[in-house]
Picture (cartoon, rainbow, N blue to C red):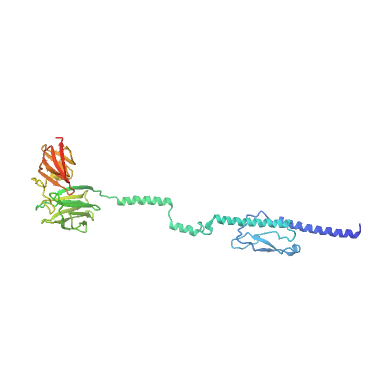
Length: 385
């Protein structure tokens, strides 16, 4: 073979060896990148930092800078040794190993950016609503709600016990509703009215026939210790104690009655007159003439107690048919009747009427009684003698 031909072949073979050595060095540089780095940092923005490279280490036509990614701090500073250098962008054919390595790293960056977007969508408080773990928000919650739910429940239970104890009445009076006759004769004692602090007592004034006796005026001895209510027309007066254990008296003037009615008010008693019907001797301006005049004084204590529903101890209850009435046999010769009916026959010896329309009669023993109410006639049969 001619010598010139051998010289040309040697030059071509040397050129091939140089190219092969360049690609081997590029492959070694790509392989030297530490791929075991931890997960890439947040890439909210495309990296702009570059690391300068010695131009003599690259073949002609290669770029003088290599794209880099900062793995460092939140203020954007990249300390020395915190840069991950991507392989250089090759200028040769796109099928080279270096170019494939570059594309692989770019794909990792894109995946990381997409993952951050997904996380941001899963935690909306980081954007629109704010992070509930924020110290300022936690401090505000502590100020507005200093107690836990368990503490709130315990507080309300304790408060309920204290409120119940505060409202508990030390003095629990026994209520009473009764009828009482008022004696207007000189030297007689004024009847007492038992009231209590925090309770209202009602006084009803009526004549001996049970008709209402209207009030004309009144005056009370200690107005600061008692509350008095009256509509200035009716026969009803309401009293209430304001100061514990206070006592005083009240003077009541009735229409067409010259003598005043004097009452003693006694506060905070064990027994309280919720309703007290005061029977005034005589007939008031609204009295009706009784069909049968009574021969027994209107201060009959037996009938007075019977109006309150308390018959005498020696009275024997007997059966009544034909109407709403109750009857008792007194001393085997007298009949006591308690009813809202008006007795027509036989004649009775005494009767009383309360403010609510209840009537009591005292009459001789009889088997049949005729009575009426609202235009209707009733025949009462008395049995059990």
